[in-house]
Image (cartoon, rainbow, N blue to C red; front, side, top):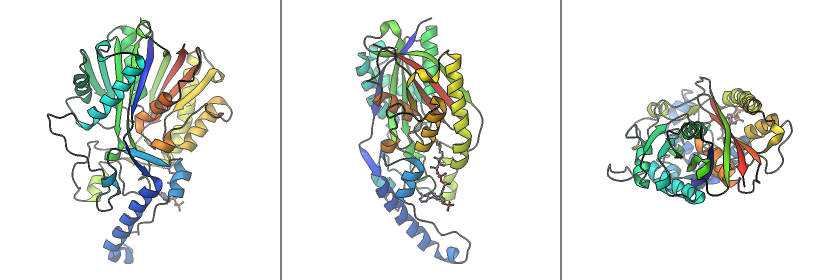
Length: 374
Ligand code: COA
């Protein structure tokens, strides 16, 4: 058995940014058009008038201030309201593969490794650009990795479930070093015309290098243990995850193919599951919450994270103990906790322990307990 470690992480951040104010201007322009076009039905009481969105609500309800996206102009065009992503030819790298390449190169650089040191790629994300061939195999090809790759999807928990899978493979010896990559083009399956959720998501890609401890050349994080849990729920659901390529014929037809959630229920139901999961994981590993120097939580909602931090630590987390990045990135599905880990782990000292925890559709919860070495 080999001891798996995380020796490098990388984040690809799209350059285009949408602030809450910009988003709300576009949404309200769309609402005006919708109400004008449907004036007769609204006056007859057959259709409710579309209400305005507001930046104040978005910040108060979620803590989100802005989001990075792969295409801003399409999303903010009130005649379109979804990203204008160029359809790639079969001969060109796909969008997810391109994002993944950048994140993987950064993770390899941080670990002081090259593609020659890696023998597997796992692309773990909420929505794949295509069904097959696996995006992971394309990433493997672009990086020039000998070995194998496969895709997996556990929605917002894809990264932690991917890390557990990679760690198990490193432990058993079926692979020596694995890149777990999370390209999330959430803007492609978000309904930007739905006031209840149009502010929730952003795009990003994260990558994590998992390898044998003896191969790690610099500071790294030992994976003490990981724990996964799923419990079926329809409260967060997507009935068809492919990216939208052309203008839909009708909103209602397409709505079933996009992200849908019963946010209030999610909020109430997921919180106790997550808090119990983390405390159970720590107990099984023989550690207490007071030993944790840091919690890197899934980034969906600030109030949710505040609640989980307080439940796990038994007190309000101190500044820096539970860093949030959602104010700058919004919810980036599986990538959120890995962005937090990547941005807020350099200052950890030899022997410090921390825990990554993701949660979301499924429901699913994944936690990874880490110890800093050097
Ligand atoms: N602008 C202004 N007002 C809005 C609005 C918007 N964009 N969207 C909703 N509102 C209004 C609602 O109409 C409602 O008004 P009412 O009380 O008069 O009916 C009020 O704000 C509260 O709406 P509600 O949906 O209950 O807000 P909330 O405080 O529950 O926050 C979420 C909504 C989605 C941010 C929150 O429920 C959440 O984060 N849930 C968990 C999400 C999650 O983790 N999902 C996983 C995704 S992978």
